[in-house]
Length: 259
Picture 1: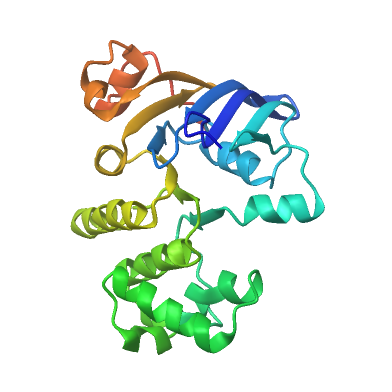
Picture 2 (picture 1 turned 45 degrees about the vertical axis):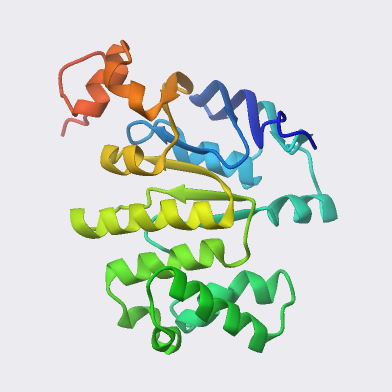
């Protein structure tokens, strides 16, 4: 496969729920080993985009290609092979409360890849070390961890199977600014070490600037601007300018319920 073929290529993606049109012809291309962050307000369709790529939601129209292969109609073993390429850090970490930390990290290795538990635990402990956690943490339960430690464990789980593509869903939600920066630096380090392509969704501009090579803004179901992260401060786009500066006044109008 030529490196010229995008790792992820999305064209004309549409998804509606009843009369609510969430994605309205979204186009986005991400190269191999590139880190792209999609920014946008709450309810603009960022999570729907990820779910469509993963196959959790079926698009109404459009194309999603991974390594040049159409992914929207996969089933059976072809879908399993498609899903094996992905790792994900969920918003809120989403650790399994009933499993010790090491088993959380090794979950995909054991359940999807059939790796023996001893080998999977060794991989999990080594991966925890890569996010700055000691072997002793592996035997703790998630409830015994701080929010920042839970996020590190979730990052370790996302990279343990050495995926080709990693999704980051609001990776700094719920963290204080210092811990958020720690997590951002770990994301950059781990993505580079794994050699993965990264697609992140966030409304945290500090995170977007830290972890991205390129930023794309999603508004009303379409990508309205994209470019290298260094260009965003002089994008010339009033929607982007309002969003990155957090201004109430501007072309983006938030819907506020009145009681």
